[in-house]
Length: 455
Image (cartoon, rainbow, N blue to C red; front, side, top):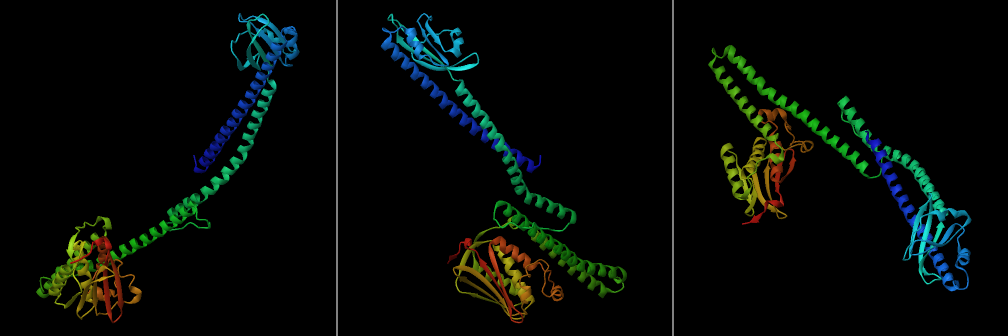
């Protein structure tokens, strides 16, 4: 069953149940009140007859006295303890009541009885008869008028129920149409995306910020994310294919050269082996970086422990300086310690130091300090800098500001992307500032959860 039909069915069914419960309650309360009123009226009449009998039983014949009080649609009867009628007087319209079974009630009672498919009130009251015995004075009255009123009430409530169902059905259809409209639009948009292969969004015409609007807005946001990720994936595949194509072409070319002339020319043999080895190493490093970048943030294996930030940076700078014979200046205003993963923090430092080495000739400066009670590491170089329009893209995978020069210097365009992934895993924020021809400054800002302490 379609959702629209389910909404119609459930809405109508619920409203019908509520209306029926309400009407049943109204009928039950009114029926109880009107029946109780009839019993009270019958009881009052019986008490009135009993008082008249007690006052005139010695002066007027009981039968004559009772005849004066017989109701126009009922019967007055006196029953002895032996269940024998002593006096029975009926109205003209209810002569058949004398044929009903006689019952004696020693106490005061009031009830509704049914005789020949008609309803009556029966009130019994014990009194002292003329011979001194205790008898039961019984008054029976027809309540067909009351039953007719209740019958009319039933018909009115039934008619109200039927009449109320019509607008309920119409309103439920309108309501279901309103609810289903954005869902239907979303379904049609999904089908269009599936058939055309192009990302589409829901038109948001509603100005109200209800749940349906939020659902459509969330759908559009999801499509934005999917489209962005799809474009990044396409770009990643394209860039990865392009980056791997170059070393594979070099390896294939030198391998073919070795196959044709390697044995005759030893110098060509050495050159080819060196080139093949260099490109193979570059491919291996690129593939390792790609595998690392394929991991999600939560999949990084972190070994968090308390670390002396000054010692870690000093050791990393010394190793880098010895490896590349580059001058690295270390400035430290105060010694700090924090909780982090030493190896991954060293990897981040090496990535930025290596970039500073490739694009600058002067000394590299590293500064450790607190900024607003937050530990920071600042790496500065006096190199060629990065154009302003490229600053927001340098952390994208395979992106290089100067592709020809970067490839010549051995870059893959994955280093800064790797540093960004590692920094996010460690909770470190990266700020990048650069001016062309002046240099670049990278600032690593640690989070408050690093438990920083001053030694």
